[in-house]
Length: 113
Length: 180
Image 1 (tube, helix red, strand yellow):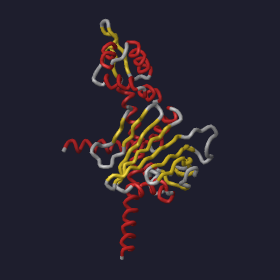
Image 2: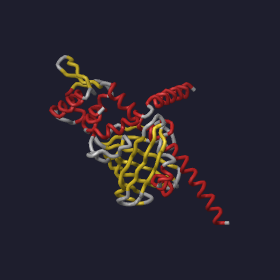
Image 3: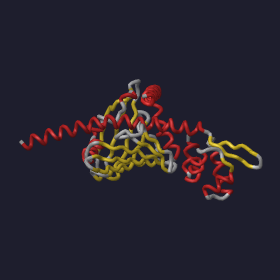
Image 4: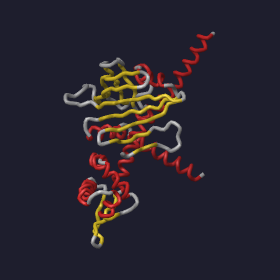
């Protein structure tokens, strides 16, 4: 999972992944759309490929890159579990906050009597 | 930037988790209470112990100690139903009630306490009150990407089976709702 995180942490690589969500694209097309030079795009795609996030397929004279859904799905499921851990805690915190406010109101009424 | 993660869309007080950079993660949540009450519940040990352990995951709070002042330390010890204890501890570096808290945190996986060389994460929590509700943002800055990875993985460790069951239930509920 470290590799997935590290690969996505770089803003341009994140943009490439976002772009490839719409479908496979050749290298030069990716560069044009994101205003990145050919060497920059190649460098980022190499990192993404090493992290298993993209696959490359030679098509005619071009190298076409496409997203591999599996690591992204895994990342998503992984984050969802951690989010749920906090969501559970916060559910209990909601109950506590309600309790504290009820007690405060009761105390408030007593003082005003 | 980063993978943003939220629960069911449209929920009123939804918990969000997002990643920023390669060693930080951010949690946000809205609470139906003024900031001073949320701040108390977040810091006072006798209140922390009422919400900090996720019961459904077979965890309960064993002890909760905190000296909430700059330079003060806290330690929350949790017990697993299936046996074993672990703890979270740290030092407060900024205490500005009711709007802002900064503290370090180290995870102690066993009763043995901190291990030499453990680097703490730094957690910055802000509580912003609007119309009697509090918008909480917690930013956790980790010493390395690997540490962030390990923390996020903890969501999986305790009671992964239960969580998977809950996910299945959730998926089923969403399916039913979509069918209506």
